[in-house]
Image (cartoon, helix red, strand yellow):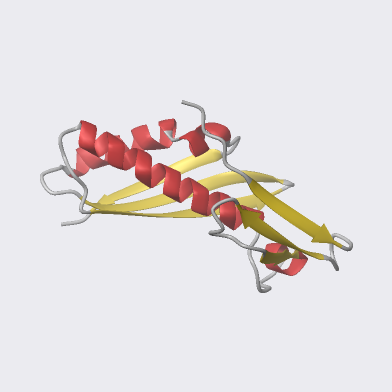
Amino acid sequence: MKIIRRASATWKGTGKEGSGTVSTQSTALNQVQFSYGSRFEEGVGTNPEELVGAAHAGCFSMKLSFIIVAGGFVAESIQTSAKVTLEEGKISTVNLDVKGKVPGMSAEQFADAAMEAKANCPISKSLNAEITVSATLEA
């Protein structure tokens, strides 16, 4: 299966004083503002790193769900947060923190499934960064 998704960005002005917008085919993002301030400071708007983090958390969670089902379980919930670090001009690390409620699954099985999801979700495979996972199975 081949899937093609589209996103776009528009930038106006210089790198530091300019600003831009990002949009997605689905319109989940529709001309969302980004700027130097939103990327390198605490300004209003989004930035590429948090978008990578959101994509990675979503991809990882879905892959983990597939792995859990293949193991004979069904997750009540999977919550993943991603901390993306940009340094020296590249994304150097992504720390995934996942918490799951999966009836009948042991903490060890959940941790193993999380490591498999990390290794095999398409976003993980696409990033040239150190990726770590902290997995917690909740009662």
